[in-house]
Length: 442
Image 1 (cartoon, rainbow, N blue to C red):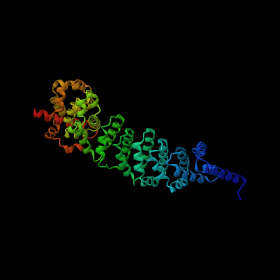
Image 2 (cartoon, one colour):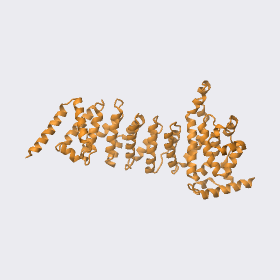
Image 3 (tube, rainbow, N blue to C red):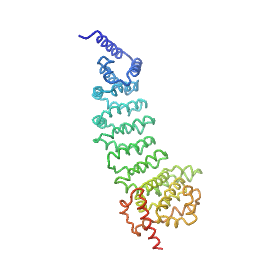
Image 4 (cartoon, helix red, strand yellow):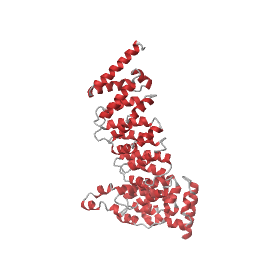
């Protein structure tokens, strides 16, 4: 026999459920408002107490209505928030299983791809997926097995809300942790996002890729090409994240490919630089047209990245000397169509000149004494003092420090192990013998 108190509670529950069943969209919206207001943050036992041990009866109604109206978007944000109260409640495993059994994950993922659904509603869907993923490995795998990575990545690329995109990043970061079966799938999905048109999506993908890379430990063959293409961006926050990832990637097996690619970007191909030629010829606003040519943005970013890498690890600086980085930096300094390329190349070359006597000798000879003294006095502003003839001389330079290093007995194969980051003693030792060799030849 149930007590009078229990009978009254059951009667209230049945009345509440009947009100829901008979209500229209407007009335249900008000019911959801009240439910969210009074039950936010409650635990599973508290929800059961609120619904006289029949909370699941209301949850099943919410999930049923979700399947019926999710394509129209009516009250969708409130509905998802209400379901979230159940799923995020402490000790709510039973609610989670009930939601998953009716295809909850597939519904949430499908919402992300619907064009008619509002951004705010999609953000609530992402938050629910976060809650599900946080339950552990089994549930992360379920999301991935439901083609979740693709749906989530595509939504990140298309989303117009930075706040929503940041929520997507949280979800992707969760899926790459503690998910060994599908972490590679998430990793590849992040790489696939790099060419997208959204700067915020690029920035967040690069940030998450750094985490994913450290977890996975091996690199995907396409990552170097994709990251280098990101350097064409005109958004400095994206460029920063790309360079941070590049700093990490030099510690993996793609280091040589990456360094070679960066050096090659310092001298854009004729095919690339001719792409805007017809426009330049027909428009008097030449500086405005050339200032944002992607290949020049990439050139400047590559020069900056090379400087960052060289300053952080002298063995990398030595390796790039063998890749003829000095020749390429001088050529970039001669690009009078893009002042930032000249500036970044000049700043990076300044470091190589200061650290390697052999570089100093060749740069001085290539520039000529007058230009070299200007370079020493203020490398950052040198581009403002270069005339067209000097620019042409720099662009056509024939400096080949790699050849001199080989003749000086500094074989390329040694560069990977006899120098460590910021090891000044060893750097001085090598620089000393380079200088001795140069003086002996004179």
